[in-house]
Length: 232
Image 1: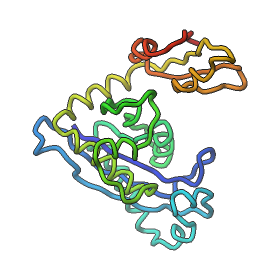
Image 2: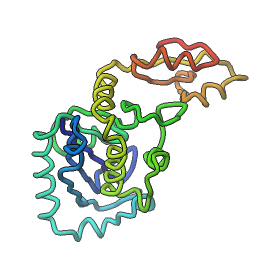
Image 3: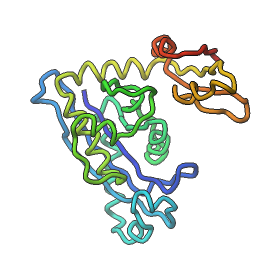
Image 4: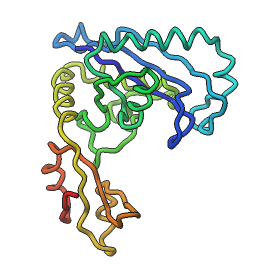
């Protein structure tokens, strides 16, 4: 099985334009000697402004003065790489997948390394940072918030689980194919902190504490709660 591990850096969250993209083709095998990164590529993409420069350190001048043929060759190569991959993976696929699919004009089979994979990380909800996962695995971190750095960090997380990786990936595929359901916390004002701690979000329009989760994980999650829930 081959996986295309992808990360992007963008100019914003709400009106995001990709200013950098990186990808590594990663092979998964029952034989650990046949498991690992095969090919990696990364490039900046031209943007005229970057409000998120304070986060990723990518100035518009850097992207505009980079040789144009580099980005062109990279995107052409990236368009071919999914042909060799069974799945595309991003740490936060909910954010990266639409951007990459639009950039490449494609519709990849996506897995989310944060929400679909069970790394054994002791989190109380399905939202955590790649850096936290890496540190928990004993991986040293030197730089973050550049696409190439974040892809390499996620690749090393895969490397730390080579023995169990086929089972971990197959389970992630099962989870990703499970429908997403939305439900609300049955809490009042006095115990609203219970919902917040459990990873529910306040929906101001509907006046509800809500959460979305894969159906296959719903029953197990509900058992951890000190309050009732109702599927919306």
